[in-house]
Image (spheres, rainbow, N blue to C red):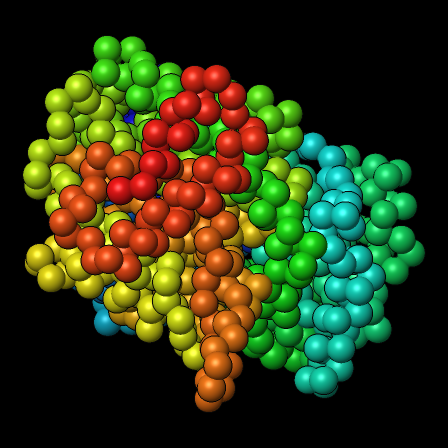
Length: 599
């Protein structure tokens, strides 16, 4: 097997052959997806980095990898520091680094199918200071040296039933057509895989953990659509589902499809469409109008059927989590589990529901110091035993036809009592979680305005965490879904300025991480709902908690909780018991009763 050093050397030789002085390698695909198919995992193949967000730059004499605070520890574990310098985002950027390190007059290559136009413009501008240029390559040089690169998935696309979607594809296309007409537009290019899936009520298995099919859509103002998808994915069932108003073309004819838009006013989302699409439309003579993907907001606002489906999915998922937490409490104190075996056991509990389609992401199963790695991914090399008298963090989720789940629980593995510092940190995280869960706010409030609700008790002790507090969640779609999120407004993070609207689903997941020791995170999903307040001056909103699983009572320092916080936790556990008890029996039920006892 080729080493990562050999792969880097092979790429440098290919760059020299292509007349390039450097190349930029992101974790991305042609749809700007967060999670990508195996065929697009170029950064992991080249460097060994297994996170979901990162970029590398390779020059003849230097190479750097760029990650944000979620991956600060992980990148050092997985990527060879002899070969790569570690760069932190947003403290620096690819553009800033190249402005400092690119050779004078250099030609730096990039794949226009893997970056946005805004990114390309920023990097090209930064390179001007070095009299260097950014060059869109005709063929990705990584692909030239990745000799055993997997092919894109040939799996068929399948219809997503209206009983789960709650709205027909015809209705959705008509809504997009109204949106186009209202803006004087002829068409919209829909490139995000989850947008295509939601708009046409189709799903697939082309990207691990996200039920989407590799495809593009051009939605037209007359309510029709053009779907570009590999022919092997198209079944008679799919054709019947799509109907005559959706014309089907081979995926490799997408650029040709863009060329037919000459002279038309075409909406393109600059955050979700890659630079190559803008280049193709400009070359064809289309009139580009930059607009947010018209599917994004309707997809985020769950209709009543999707909301009911989420509740059903969370109910069955919570029972699987409860069975798992009981298993951990029983097996782990005797050294009877590892991170890998625990993740496998949790998967099995979910699978035993008979309705699990996939996990919604790779389970983060972090024992002891591995729990401090925010987006840790366990492997045979990093696998730790769930040791007695240690902390175990598990962040996981399932994909069901009626909903997507995401939950984090942190537990203490006895037999001794947890230390006071740990209980203090856990309780501060819990207090922040409760504060956000109980928040009531006027319409127009953004996620960035709510973020400090969850951090305030950590801040009071001089502590914080380096990730967002909440992300949107799809309906049998992406576990990380925009445009809404709850996070600090700094760092150019998308979504923090999006107003929260009734029907949106987000996570509530404050945390604390002590490097080399342990991690704490408490995560539930919440639904934004309208709140009727007597005498209210305007429309107000709050959160309905959707996730039901016990929160570790033995890690709570009750003295740090206010009377209102204690009442919230007791009421939450009473509801957990009510929802989950009918699904459990025997020792699992007895464990649940004890885990949900009032404080």
